Length: 94
Image (tube, rainbow, N blue to C red; front, side, top):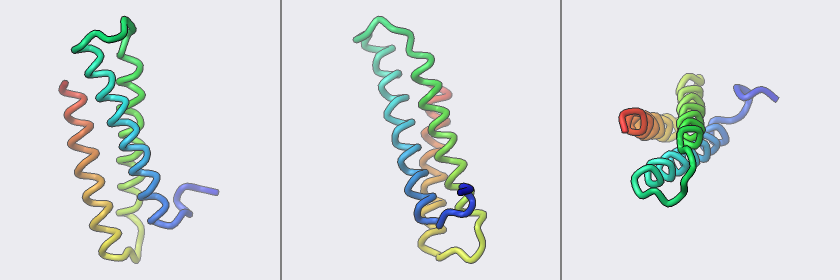
C-alpha cells in the first residue's frame, strides 16, 4: 500500500513516531559529544536522527496536502510541522 493512501490520522501518528525518535537520537548524540560518555563517533547517529526528523516532517506535510481535511487534523499537522522544523533547525545549527 502506498503512503499517500493511508488515512491522515495514521500518517500523523507515524510522523510523530519518526519525529520523536529522530529528536531522541539527535539529543543522545549531542549529549555524548559534550559529556564524552562513549568514545564513539556520533556523526552517524546524529545523521540518522536528522533523517528521521526529515521523514516525520515530510509525512506531516503530506497530511497537510490532502483534500477534505478536518480542521483539528490540519491544526495537529501544522503543529507537528512547526515542532519538527524547529527541532531540525536546532540540530543542524548545534
